[in-house]
Length: 320
Image (tube, rainbow, N blue to C red):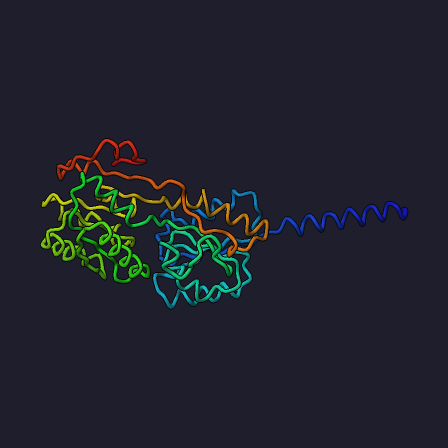
């Protein structure tokens, strides 16, 4: 083989090496605080599916859970931090809190979280460090105004049900208090520890003569909306949810961000920026979907003789 041919072959091999190095196979860890059903179409599964269709190459995309246990979550995230992942993605506000303690160096994106300011990220345009992500947060004042619109302005006293165990509960509770005060609406609060507590909590709120009940952002609350609605229907008191799953179970309405749209519209483009372009999450603004979605349960509205304004019906993405 001539010297020129050898040189050409060497250059060709170097080019292949460079291209191969550039087209890296990435390692991503997806961490969900909650323990989900294996048959459920989870956000974690959706993220993995979208990553695989993003055009990037992956050597592994691993899924982990904190099993709804804080100590377990801290232990798992500590292990992930030491495992040289190119990106860690956490799901839920409850996952974000231990993440702030344990994920110090690995690029990290969160999703399905409440207002990040509640958890210490003061600058949403430039979060800093190694973290940014997507929030489902819709200002509580805006939500209450929406519920009031559905009730034709007749909302003097609001009942609120919170999950005692939810890490976001304290922050969310503060905001609901501040929003109610700002809007001149009285409120009553009930905390539950288990879904079996929902009946007592609902009856206490009804005894205090609330005009409506809001199910706040914990699956233990909104996923069991039917237990609340079964009691309130008799008194013709409307129930609202901050999550669309509550509407499916009988809540009148929710003004909410869709978790799957959040992934498609916001999270995957951010992940590509981090992995492909090497951008630090801390330099990327926290994102949310452009337009909150309206979910209505007109079947339940009829049961309690509630007439939903036409304006609201026209805005509904989904009606049950």
